[in-house]
Image (cartoon, rainbow, N blue to C red):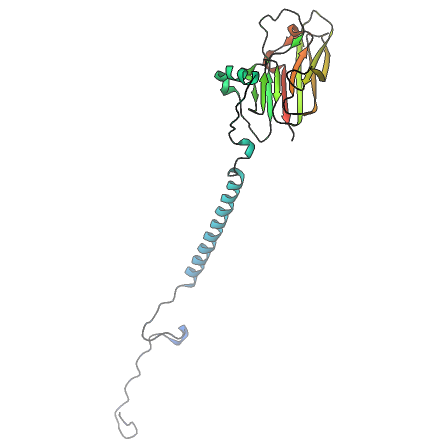
Length: 246
């Protein structure tokens, strides 16, 4: 060491510092570089946007699964129904038209029936209208048809039933009837459960009957009119339907 008090030699210069004091204390052995403040803000914004995007995608996925990923109800599952007797034989005869029959569009029983034009339309007579199975839709096996003119209910409940019959004949001026008949079984005598009337004073008239009916298993419904030859079958002018209200 040089003693400056007794020597004329100038003291050695002070070594330069790595960083100025304005930048704060810095490590001596491993110096680091400071990131710009603007870059840190951009990185933070990107991370926040990424978290929000993941949250939105998770909420959308949950909503989609809630709306479309619910399992089928028990009533919508395929049924192992095996019929017997006249109803099953009639259903077997029309297997070639099975693509016109819907099993169940929802969890409720329904039927949308159309009628078949008679082979001798000009013959005046009363009777039950015949189902057009090829263009009808109904829930199988909860609703079946029987003997061409009857629908058999296999699931009890309260049903909204409607029957619309349109008549067309300008030569007669008389009151015509749309009658919904109900019987408890194939051997029971039919009784009137709903009916409507219209007058054929004009070229067309429509009689519509509708109401809420309690139906039990095995009950059958049919539509009867006093003059089948006057019924108009054009584009759904005459139709029948039911819907289970549970």
